[in-house]
Amino acid sequence: TAAPLPYKVADMSLASWGRKEIDIAEQEMPGLMSIRAKYAAGQPLAGVRITGSLHMTIQTAVLIETLKDLGADVRWASCNIFSTQDHAAAAIAETGTPVFAWKGETLEEYWWCTYQALTFPGDKGPQMVVDDGGDVTLLIHKGVELEAGDRSFVDGKAGSEEEAVIQQLLLKVLAEDPQHWTKVAKEWRGVSEETTTGVHRLYDMMKKGKLLVPAINVNDSVTKSKFDNLYGCKESLADGIKRATDVMMGGKVAVICGYGDVGKGSAQSLRGMGARIIVTEVDPINALQAAMEGFEVTTLEDTLGRGDIYVTCTGNVDIITFEHMQKMKDQAIVCNIGHFDNEIQMDRLNTSDAIKLEIKPQVHKYTFPNGNAIFVLAEGRLVNLGCATGHPSFVMSNSFSNQTLAQLDLWENRDKYAVGVYVLPKKLDEEVARLHLEKIGVKLTTLSPKQADYIGVSVEGPYKAETYRY
Ligand code: NAI
Image 1 (tube, rainbow, N blue to C red):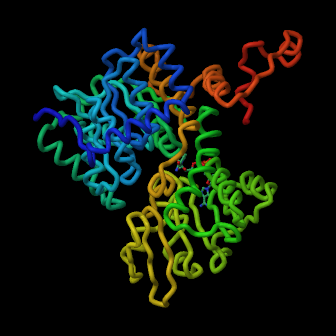
Image 2 (tube, rainbow, N blue to C red):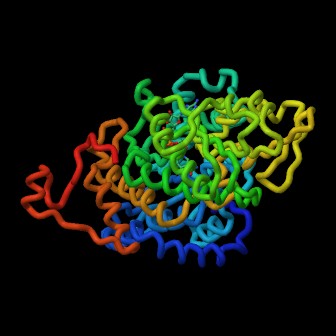
Image 3 (tube, rainbow, N blue to C red):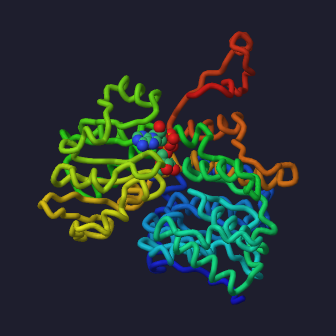
């Protein structure tokens, strides 16, 4: 087959702007920078082929350059059609790292980019994968299953436009080379997964006995989900809605669907600007938490006609249905901050009799026959990455330190790991937090030996039992 392309990005003239912002981000990412300082000399990932599928932002550029500093041979794609920051992609391409990502890809382009990112010269696949949402993992698994004779995915009725695109890609590759995915998967040794939704997919494959490689669930490091999902969304949700609409948040009624980590951060984000928050939940524990925080908790149906802003944060499907949107207050804003766009019934809205008007890219007004209109942001995809620039560097340094430590651990212990889904040990979780203290002037108290003994921990940690929930 033809040699893989060197890169494909929107505009290489943005590279120097991207580089300046990467320089700023490095100052805010002490975890990644100290991992570089500690490990670069030893080159623990020397020559290891790593494919990344994770929002191609400035912060991700710092992750990519960290992996490269440790010796890795990296190829990258974004994990969302709208989340690439074109100046970040250009800066990475300029260093000679193959990156395939631009803001505003079509679904065909998105899956083409993913395919490019996992095709190394010589028809080789990755040895390691950094995934966010599990699309690389999904593609390789579906390809290998197909080549092993399981046609159920490609012959099944596509559940969405995107699934049809994946089916076509798999069939095209199969026609060109019936052993392609088997070759790609041959030297694959592990994946580290960034987000809640991707982690669900991994556990599901594990349960069905289909998982091919050991996986580290980065999301459930405390220094990931209790920081990125929570404090990251706290800052980036309001940013996304503001950049898209400039709407006044104070006094508005905002409906937060789902009160997990992302929902908690999202509720705080809009409350911080004076919005009045309503939460919807299915889990009595989370519903009670929201109520104890002072939020009204009710069903979505109950909010129709009074909600001004709707945000889905569940990682679940069909949260906001077409019927809900028809009954919303005129000028309501609808957006999603969960990983996939199926939280809102976008397919039904787009094929309905509502008239769609583009205000600007990623901001659309839909007018219903009765004259009422709603605004949908980022076409139902993650609003913080589609309409703003995602989470700030400091919080992503925590997430990506976990990613890097997961890659190091999986690679170093590749012959010891059995196929399964693992989380990093608490000691490393505490280490990631520790790396971020100095930057913000935090002074830790040291346990006396008597105190350590009294609470049954060691002076150096870990400080909590595995059951502790933070
Ligand atoms: P989580 O599991 O902590 O929270 C989801 C919550 O939604 C749960 O409490 C669940 O009970 C609730 N829920 C499920 N179905 C519901 C329904 N029908 N109605 C109301 N509530 C319902 O998950 P987490 O970590 O908060 O992640 C949520 C989503 O956000 C995932 O897709 C994740 O991948 C994504 N994510 C997005 C980020 C971003 O920057 N945009 C950052 C981190 C995660």
